Image (cartoon, rainbow, N blue to C red; front, side, top):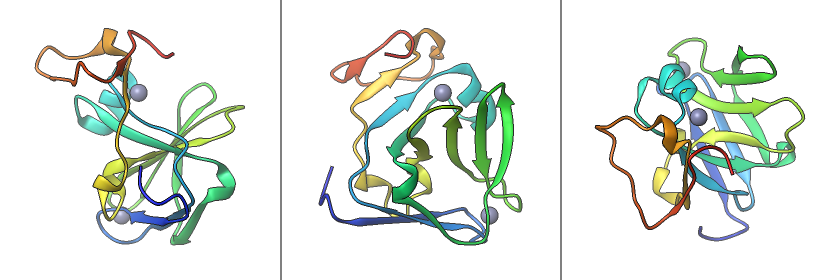
Length: 134
Ligand SMILES: [Zn+2]
Ligand SMILES: [Zn+2]
């Protein structure tokens, strides 16, 4: 997953929101759940994790929507780019890998919620794969 002291930078499509992540991501995985499909408009979403203290919004602000009880999804209020995911009581936040300036900086190691996978969405069977959430 790269240099553990590196700072990862990313932001939304229109440039109104930028963020930085200091240190190594806590995980990276592909989520096939129906909620992510709906919220993001894609068959699968690659997330990576960071502790709240690793994550810093360096420009603009993230708009939050409580998409399920206790679940907040963060996005740019101007262009709609999905940026973050946070569950109540979770000690880390999820960040969309594709919003990184260099999305290849993280390497997803798992697929979760394969029960919700769409038949047209292929996946890497060599990863750690879970029918639901591990
Ligand atoms: Zn934007
Ligand atoms: Zn999901």
